[in-house]
Structures are given as structure tokens and as C-alpha cells.
Image 1 (tube, helix red, strand yellow):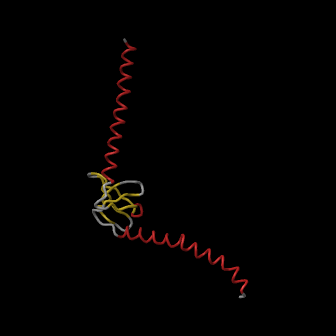
Image 2 (tube, rainbow, N blue to C red):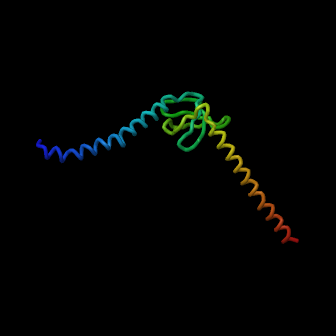
Image 3 (spheres, rainbow, N blue to C red):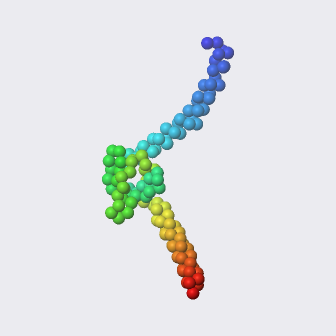
Length: 127
């Protein structure tokens, strides 16, 4: 190879090196962390699935886990569907339930109000 061929090949080689450090390496690190998280799953761990379901692991199997999502309610979920393990200090589960409860109350109140006004209008028309 003479010098001109080497100089023509240098930009391509440089692009491959940049591509490696920008994409492949971070992706491999992320895959490694995810696999470590899945390997560290234990009974009693609180997790979140890809579908946003909060649950506690009650049984581990090779391909799936059993999650308790409520009293006497267990679901079978693929191991790969688990996206996050909640730590002891994680309070996101409790906060999200409080927000849901408040919004449910507002919906109930709003739904009850039109029904009452409709009944009043109906009785006025009947009289």
C-alpha cells in the first residue's frame, strides 16, 4: 500500500472508531447493566414492568416471574418485561396511588353532579 491509499482509507477508519465509541460501546454497557438487574431479581423485590404495572416478586422462574399486584392477585410476567427494581427508599409507588385516588374522586364528583341536575330537569318537565 502506498501513502495515497492509506490517506484515502483513514477517514473511513476514523468513522468506524467514532461509531464504536458513540454507539456500540454505550449500548453494550446498557445491555450489561440490564442483564445484571435481571440476574439480581429476588423474591420480595418490588418492580415495575414495561407496561407500568407495580408488583412484588413472589416466584422466580427461568423465563418468567410471578408478581403480586394486589391482595390475592398474582400475574405471570416475562422476565424481560421488568424494567426497574424499586429500592427501599423509592416512594414513587405511594405517590402515584395518591394522585390516582384524587383524580378518581374528582371524576366521581363530576359524574354525580350532572346526574343530579338531569334528574332535576326531568322532574321539572314532568310537572
